[in-house]
Image 1 (cartoon, rainbow, N blue to C red):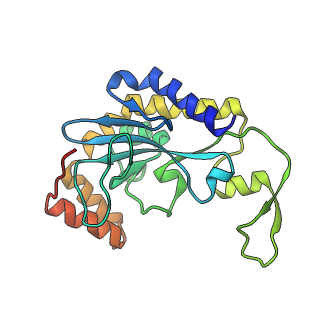
Image 2 (cartoon, helix red, strand yellow):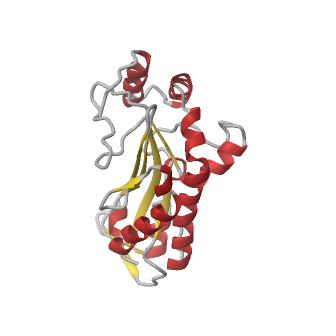
Length: 218
């Protein structure tokens, strides 16, 4: 499966599972929901050279119409930006746990693949070697493609398994996505940012924006 086929699969799965809930799709396979209190985006993102490895990182992104000083706000059908993002495959366990932080909480971008997104390798099983241009050594290190893919957070699976994993993302979003978003009140977002944000400058911008209730309109 190539990237174009992966986008087509997103159109198909989204139409099956979340379109009836009010989500709308972009030409790149992202899905957006615009509500009165918040927006949600099902974002298919690249991360750490993943576009070269047939990997997409699937995230559910939350925005409650709060704008920071320097970060562009979420723009429906164009830009998925918000203070909170979750790997869709964590939704069920998190909701069933009664929103226990042990199952999911805010984490800074880059600190953990599986917390923020579901990395899906869709390229099928291959056995050819891969020359890493990202090696810290002067000369490229010869590594296997599976090793390189797993180092980017994804599992090497068949196309059939990748499709099943992708559909499970949509199914959990349909069943639990709104419960996750409804729980992200102003107070809850601030609690998580202050508890887990590690005083990161972007987190501090979000905290300032939420404390000042810096709303924007679309």
